[in-house]
Image (cartoon, rainbow, N blue to C red; front, side, top):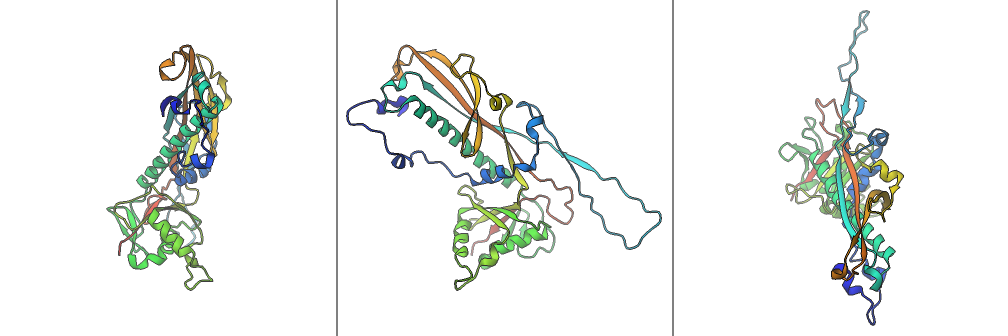
Length: 340
């Protein structure tokens, strides 16, 4: 209930145990955002050049020069200059706000620091949940729109932009995914995001190990698979997956310099900047204090209210491909399992 009315010190009240209260504090899993964040080595040293929210950044790289090899040596050979290109990251901000009163909790079972920490954590949870949705939307939007001709192991459909796997091949779904990626010249380990239907299939196939009657171990080498309860594609109700070379799609998270260094005072009218760490992520915190009459909300006529904002910027990026002739035009490939 708002303003902690139900937690006032009355007879026979006690704080709910942590385990019993944990269901109330649950949050949506965020495996995709976590995976992309771990791949942030895609962008090196961006904090040194992105000094403010509105400062643009550029990432430069040398492009792949693709040509047919000659069949004989020549005395007057001539070549072409290698080219370079750039990626300009775009940034999005997610934030959440809350307030807390200096005197509101004087009649409460919960002390100020406990409530403040809980509010901070809940704001971070809300942001992470939003980041997960943002991550899935990015990866889905950036999926490949072409595949090599004569693809083996699946059939590419241009309208939904996905490689389809027939229902009859359900038990070799993940094996076929690996070999389609190899046909795109992605020969290393593969990051794979799967929906709930494929997560159920994966668990079923995985337990059929070498010691069981049906060995499905050939499905798994080189695959880093994470299930997402949010990933879905209406074109593939039986199951869908998004695959990309390991480390080649990233989320770079950033907060302003003043927050990283610390500045000011949360308990002042001007306010201050700081950070809050939660679940391995660092969030920017801005807070300030102001005089207030909180008597109508279970507080006091002479009170101080502190307003807080928690935020984080993210830039989602995939490895660029300048050479797409005869291959995929994106490192991200969607796979769809057809219904039987």
